[in-house]
Length: 137
Image 1 (cartoon, rainbow, N blue to C red):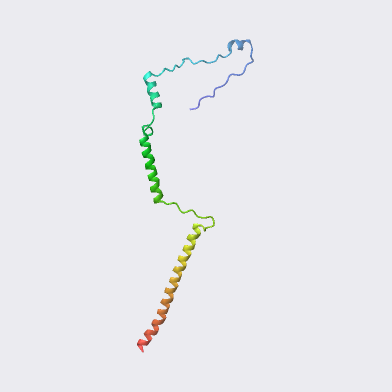
Image 2 (tube, helix red, strand yellow):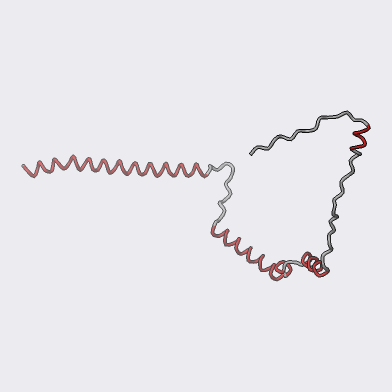
């Protein structure tokens, strides 16, 4: 449903009739003043006591010392379980270089073993026909 557009009144020239009909606008004051009631005395005391209260776990020095000892023990166990790698000197090869060299050595050893096995199999295969010929003769 469409509502008709509201039309603004046409502007008029300011004159005596307009000034008398529309006096200077007065500042608007709220019709009802809002008053804050003060909270009850017991409520204020409870809030103040709550603000000043210290947490019991932090107030007791024995508990704080036990927490410190337990934290130190847990850190020591963590160091034992996950040791820090030794400090590498600046001129030492990087760990990734060591890993690559080790992989190359392993690959070379595997390749050499495969070549030896292939040569041995070929030698057996070449010797096998000669043995079968001797048996049949």
